Image (tube, rainbow, N blue to C red; front, side):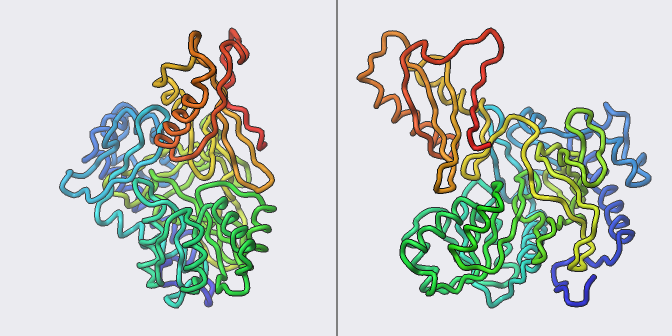
Length: 433
């Protein structure tokens, strides 16, 4: 590892061979732990004719069966559990493809590992105990806010936990506390930049860095945020609730790709159609296998995220491998303001409203302000008058907000307005592409 690289939270490995040896040890532990303690995995591995003793090298990983989001749903509410309940100290959840969320369990060691990984992210971004980190991502069941705070406290920097929105308070604390780092989604960072510009506060800020996660963002959006906030660096932080949460990698100050924490999980890239591995540099679906996770270990978990491994080492000298930014999804999920949404979730909400019919459309737009907007177009049922349009629209907006935690506008149409087809109806129209 490069001599100038801070190693407080980095693994003690200096070569790919040392990293592979560490991965093999962790993979053996995960396979045995899962086989002996998780009824789900024991059944799945037995069906595949595999026992922990069959694992001889990292090349044997491809013999193991995949785990999917559907598996987590079917095993709701405590999927993949591999420890007794009295060892589970926390749960987090993310959206699911049906009415049920994906709930993941954590032990004390899981949380300690997550905090360590996140502190590593801050360390790689060049933060120190002198930094003041304003956290503007969501708290609660989501992994975002508490993950950013855990890592900040582990590093020893000052955490300023505000959460998203509340622009007046954000601006007040940026100025009064002289926050040096701002953590947010890209949309929130852009909104913050515009608010700082509107209030003419840039010269009063001490901001140097922005760490953004949870949604894709373009290079032009990055440039705009840097311009508005006057920061030196924007860092991209990936995250997946099933894999602890945000903090499982970061692009360093060279911004040549995302270093991922290969001492905590193995990353494969596969063709989502053939399920075969693809070579470095080729885009495919991310598949992750954890090496230390106790409560809910992952064995070849198909994330549905699309990216590619970057074969060249980073010029920073860190031996940890690189993957590209998350480029999209291999299924029909779409993201609005950092929230993962499936059409089935919208269908579930709309089906509870008796005044509307079964046909609907979702329209996604990115307007000139750089933010995403979602509009739901639905039809009134026969016999329901136009005088109820406003009431119906308010309920749709309220129910979707309550279920998806994202805002949407609603347009109420006459019965028969939306097109019909004998084939599968197209529900989502993404005008942002």
